[in-house]
Image (tube, rainbow over all chains, first blue to last red; front, side, top):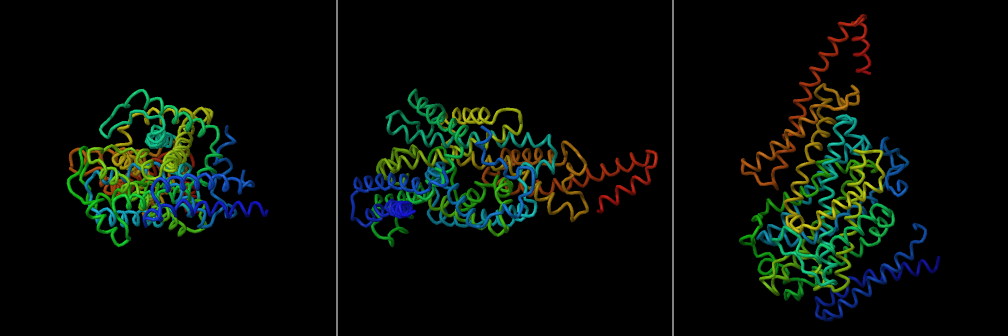
Length: 58
Length: 485
């Protein structure tokens, strides 16, 4: 139960991380190659944790 | 493979009981995820090619999407929540079991072509990794062996998964939906920065001068005005709302007002996603004005790298998957004894072959309008049959009541409306994007008129037959009493 909650929190953080690099780039705080790396990392973490957090539905 | 069906035990032939009805949140999630599809990445850039201006585009989308939501809310959902049957079960009651297979065939073929364009979109992303020669905007035929191999591979994977593992992909699609929405938003934000926008206050100026400045359409495109955008946004899901395909969805809604949830799909997928995809294309044109090809894969790669490519593939895959599955269901309804697995594979094969030809995706605006036009008349028939016929003293669901296998007024309305629409487009100077509105109204009137003639004639025949039989007068009396009951 605790692990699932933790996974869920991480998944939501990863989801938020798919947007903030774009916003940081818009404001000139991040360059495009860094944005692409962050987006890939956030995407991997989102899918891994969101999938793992829903075992009952599988 | 029947146990993989999402519709088994889902009240395919019977009304949805109160215990199985759903709240508004179910529809919010479904519409928000279904309308962020791979095809949005084609439609956005294609708008830009039409030379539409920023204000026309934005206001056209606002009004058109609002009209689409109102169509679901005021036309589809009220019937869905009263009858609570699938479209197919409803049609069978209305026009008999012989006409439904024809509708299913048309629907299945259209689904295959739509899935084909989604496969094309996914192949443009896979092609970035394999370095194949991509098709250009004007290509009709496959651009080479690499394109054929990539598209066949992508299509085969999607088809096999649709046939064998529908449920797993449906769950994956639900998981991917919020991620895709945010990545589409990221496409737009990154694109704006690439076009030199650094403050939110600059967006309006950039939109009118650099992104959608308006003007002459590019080669092969029709010039779009506010009305084109508005009607396209309204009618791109015509088959679903005024065409009544979403009777199957809203039969589960506790209240008809839950159809307002469709606004999530319209204003996320058909507003934000289209604008974002359009901005990506504007970035491509700003970098190289001569590079006019609409290739979602390379555009997403330039903005978001590997995550962008994954988004294109996932968006194409997760929406092609249910589309192929639905095409399989439509075909299987024609040949009920056929294995659902094999029929879905066949639908996937047709979609893959369609996806080989880039012209289908590059002409997506026209195809979507055509798809809605073909299925729209049966939606008008359902509306007229449900609301108008009883008020005019005519019989609703005549085929079921009389045990008829083919209700001629419904078939004649469909064929005559399509013929009239084709004539209006071919010789009347009406553009394909607009023809479905007069077509729907024509179908409504035609069905009422033909039903009036047909049912009067049928009643006359019945009365004459009964009057000629022994004990005829008593039979007529009994028949009238039972119809009043």
